[in-house]
Length: 480
Image (cartoon, rainbow, N blue to C red; front, side, top):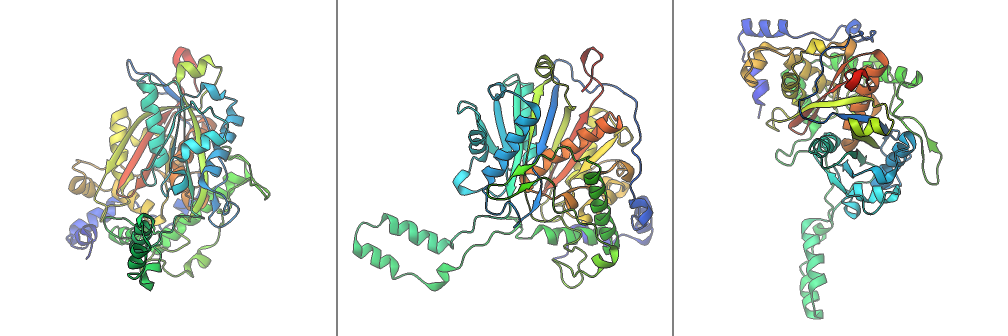
């Protein structure tokens, strides 16, 4: 059935269509997708809250994000998470016994290590007395890990928390069919030969058909790729616009990699293999080559292809989060403050990927900021069409009024401040680990460019998250 959004947009009057189109920024002009120097921003007001502890990111790391099926394919998720934790310990020199709590996010769980945070922590040499737990919230799982850390510190329960995330798409659980699982369990309970033979007589060959995992929503049975294709169609995002945006992501990521700006990446000596030191999914191409690819999901007329979608990725990230007073007492110069955040949720059928549109104005209002105050935007790039559809929704008064209950649009992020070191389309997207990468990219960009405020946002299976970061506002005139 045609989606609500598609139906609504197609049935606007000619005048309304013109007004809507004129209110959204057209992105098919290649010149708009080129990198531009980030604007320097003078120190503004503080976002500190009265009677609440200041919470800071001391530092964060990630092992290289790799295409699934490459160098990490023979490992397990806790191996990647352990490597990220070890890299963080090496980068920060934080004593293990100072860490009060460890939280990791993941999406597709390895059944042998369901609490991957705990297994990774033990493997990295943390005390067995250090609590650890694992969270899952689709593509914002490590965002949830970070904000859970913020809550633990803000409430005074902890002073030092490590948050992170991991995903290993090279080896995902493949189950027997339900009939086969039931038979195997019943056979295990059978006490006599007769009971076993009776159960075996019910066996059918189709019981052997495996249940393969799919990147699909349980409630709708629709893959994210199909949702992205429908969303792009609803917002009239062309194939050319999507390819141009994807090319921009790869070009910016390549430039950042060559200039050493991806400083959160730490090398990982893969057991039995060489040391991996950089992301391997950054592959700038050309619009001509990208145009040759066939639609990946809705065939033959879809616009989402392998070139303008994020790829299946293996990787892990970890971040050291502290109360500001604890960090300063230990001699750390934090990267940034973690400020206001918001979670949102929408209809998973028609608005699966519009989380940033709904979350951004809310988190700005919580902080008393506007889009023009933000110096660095870092949004998760699930698909080019998803990013560009969010841009158009954010820049539409009509959408704000009819879908969000708002009087006016929030406005779309200026490209010269947006994902300037590449994004998930090029760097990769290990589901559970991307949130920490986004926050560290935002923090590192603020420090490099002298900015004060950053905004991180991501979609997540009908939900979304947005996070404000800040710098240049520490106690006593100091600053992260």
